[in-house]
Length: 331
Image (cartoon, rainbow, N blue to C red; front, side, top):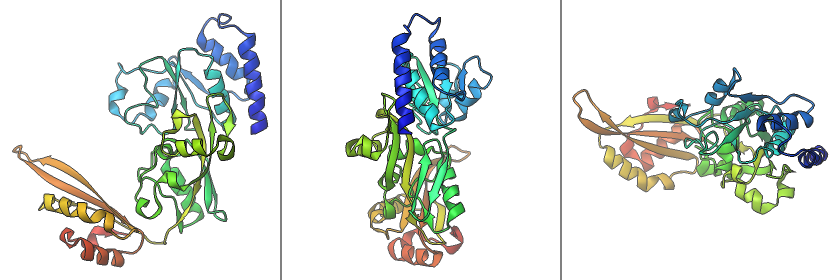
């Protein structure tokens, strides 16, 4: 990859100096020529005139407010098919002066930072870069940034029922943004954040250089694991550490409306002191009945890395007020 990377940087540099900005009739033509010049395989590009433009743009927008016709739209969307095309796309996109680059892997940033901007912008969408290569002997996996958490979990489960990855519970979250933002999940009390379980990473920096942990240095490697990957380059892939899990885990999600305030107060005092294998979260909601009367209810959701019997014992000992019952648990 490094030799190919160097060759591409040289080719694009020659192109940049050999052709003046006024040679082409439009910035789009400028970009298309650069992409074609540096890739033997066609790189998918979608403009507002493309039939697939709207469906690709909207398919990974998770905040419905940004689906409105008045929301800013990218000048174009680039969807690289492989890592080399991603590098080409990054370098060539620099030809469009005054246009920002937005990188999207799953679109779960509800502020729209990966697909919105107040200035002219384009999107490099990574959904085609979704390979997951599991190595059980090394207890690791290489995961491309466009893969979703659901795809990662599925590929790990294909190989083993006793390994997992400490990350989020929403299956459609993209790995690139999830890990670069820290990565909060149900096994964090036992194994930490997703970012704590990263062994190596591949990124492409603003100069188009392909870097791994060694070549980027420990400061940058530290920064991309929680500091937001798009701030420092484009995350290409992560090498994740697999964590040991038993064949059976137990989960529950229960609603309590009686004594809701007291239950939340108790939860605040015990949640961080529970067994490290047990995650217990809470969501507070306000409900209204047909007469408009409001009431508070709380949803307790949990995962225990173990069987139901041990979970019930722990809950009876540490949080008996919740009155958890066997039939409310699933394993």
